[in-house]
Length: 518
Image (cartoon, rainbow, N blue to C red; front, side, top):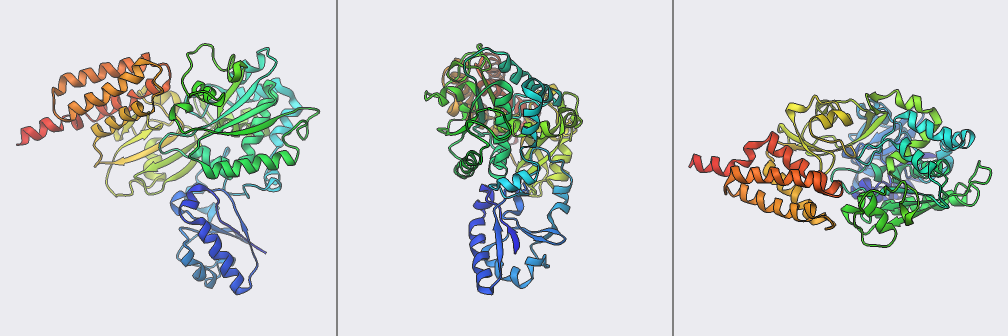
């Protein structure tokens, strides 16, 4: 029976994947043809969704942007055998966007049936866990430290140090908490891995729990991801039924570990780890003062590892191949690969996993194909809504934690939003401050009051009111927020504002220039 792959990924569904599945099943029945529909995750070539693939003797052949109305013509063209059609992209794994990547975290995403434990195991699943059980907690943490893996949520803190800190704590109970509150604009890597390869996250949580001495893990999932909740929840059920979760995890002597998925309430600040923990405990999502850090006093006051989805989902691959193998990729202190999420005004938006070190010019122009509008690129916001706007003059900066810090920027969660030359950067700076004002938890003054005063000040600048003195005031305000806020929301909100002022000063002088022209 021919296998036809149609992604269950939310992006593919938004583009009509479910209707395409129904059309294929209907057409196959009409023609008396047996087909097996497999629901894989997305391969990350998002501009081609829904990307339908057919398993042929020569490999999997892809058909992009398939609509239900295309299905009869696809059957006529013999697509079940890889037949020629205007939507064909040939063998998917020969496509330049796919072939150029180095996939480690996402190696199975889009390839296997997302909810098949048999396929997960056939593609290397649980090998990392088996090795972790064989070498024990201390050696497991050493492998993670050797890999150089840093938290993929944005802070870039070494994962091995965090795990060892919790491991060394003496406590009657410890926890693993996965931060799946992916709220940055232009980011979707966490969602993709949870929908396309959910067992990798579960395996990573078991490995972490075994390493630090925890028997319980939580996934704090943003409420805006209903499809993810459905897929991940089913994966947890399947893993529990098969003995990979529960009182005695498969392959262990007597190690108990279980996972619970908790749905967040939809606040951006709950992506900050202490707000997340407050919310997970059933309280209002508000930032805690640090110290104590969650590694010492986290969930319910117990030592807790809080890691991003990608950090945890990468652990099985590191254990499987060894930390040194993972560390052989990347540059300087940024080791391994980074799943780039290319979005905004760009031709080929999607997920692209590659070793650290790519230049922004390669990412935007070569991989992303430049702007969709065809106009010149003006800026790329790197690192979500709190990230800096990077101008074309800095496009040779390698994608690396320290290299971006040197240019007063940050790589965050790996999200990139591309803008063409029609964007008004003073308006984008205002958006940054407004975003902070709306999402602030209100606990600290610099964030709560500073963001509101920031919006007002930018409005005055845009209106041409005392422009020079208000720009000085805005810079001073940014400095106060940057160094006086309790958490990254208030502390990073100045990045888009300061970068817009620094690299695009002309956009803050428009009223004066327009007045002079008159």
